[in-house]
Length: 254
Image 1: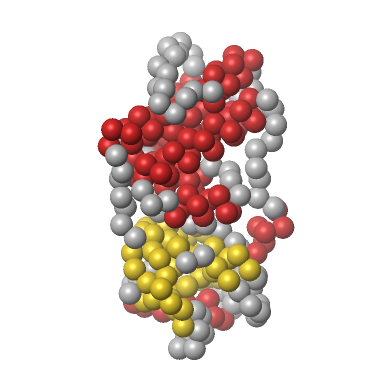
Image 2: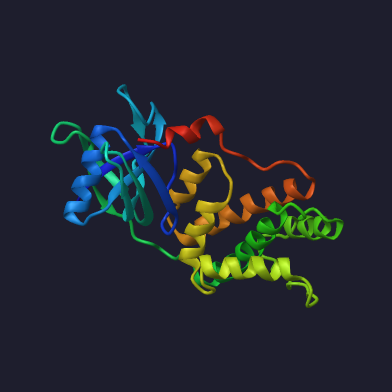
């Protein structure tokens, strides 16, 4: 299959939204072609080069298709678009001569579950840790009791599934985080859970790319389990989690 390519300093995951401001002529052409054909484009993470202007670029061979959901056009030809990641692909070739933008050839990657007996417990632990991670990111998420609970979760072994402690009726923050997690990834859907958490947890781009390229949901969840345990431990000790370089944010304008 042919895939119009949009290299960015971002790793898009299936199910994750990606807003873009499009102003470069080549990417205006890409968006116009995709809208006319009713087809997505491919987002690949840059490893060398910039998102804007000329120059040499290099990018990952595994990316995610981005479906255009909303478009706001401006009189001067610029546009704001809202996209959402749909499916992963692997590039087998790139052509830079036929269009103003790069066109890749590749194939969609299947979503392999892995060992169901391991995936189930992993998914439960990742979901629980993700909820705790969201709690600790809140301004009041560093209470003393929360620190103890977070540290206990971070120390769970890979094959241990601790029972969720009983919560009193006034523990609305936890319940609110549970509801958010359920909306993002319905319980029982380990594949969606793995992709959505990969797209939301704060992590360096190379680590996020590794999560995208995982060969199975089981592998992805195992990596997320370790990553969330690390982040929970840092947050419980009131240490800042990884944050993207703010200088890269303006580059997401193409």
